[in-house]
Image (cartoon, rainbow, N blue to C red; front, side, top):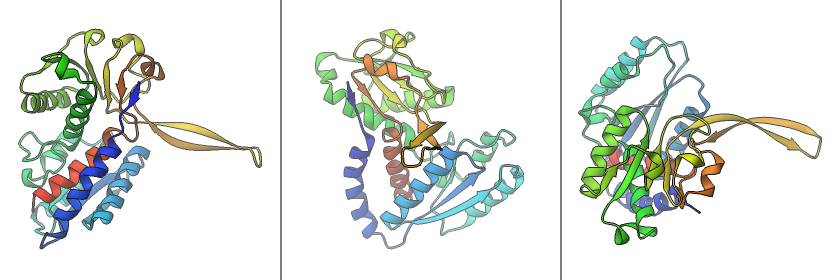
Length: 274
């Protein structure tokens, strides 16, 4: 089985992106709204901030406590919509349960929705595009389309994500991606359930390509041999059980798979908005 790292692909793409940024007359700014103390959310926002600064892009972070009222977030978004210095707005998901995610996203102006979450957004979702990028590489490395004229794909995702992904698959693979209702028969599995160990070996066929989009936070313990202390820390993992590695031909890791390409695609959307 091969581990397909998105970081390696993203690093190559970022070289060209840096050259484009150098030639811009005005620096694009990304506004990111972070609510609460979710570890994975803070982790990915910190990576986005670091990468933005490396690329020479503007980055403004707005942090709210868990109990924030929805009206405060909506007020900020409307203010950012009018700010000509802000090229894109991103609300880091997931949000606390008392907030209506759909209503909050709906308040982002379509032309500033660089995360591609609105139905009428002018941008492709960076995560959807990351799945397409990884799938293209995986199919190429497996010489898949040279052997077969099409491939079957099964989805363990939310309805909204699946709908957008199917549309993007049709646009990029011109009808070659055929949905499989039974994952055990599918050539490709896309999993984004947000459930630890959700995808198991008995759910896929031998040689399947698995694109893991899931993000889960677990507690892990490190044994410090020097002083016998046990150090607890948070760790991010995907939706795939370890048993999947026994049957999959290609698997994307979490972190390091979909994430790096998602961040690249996000900043590409931001720059394309200038």
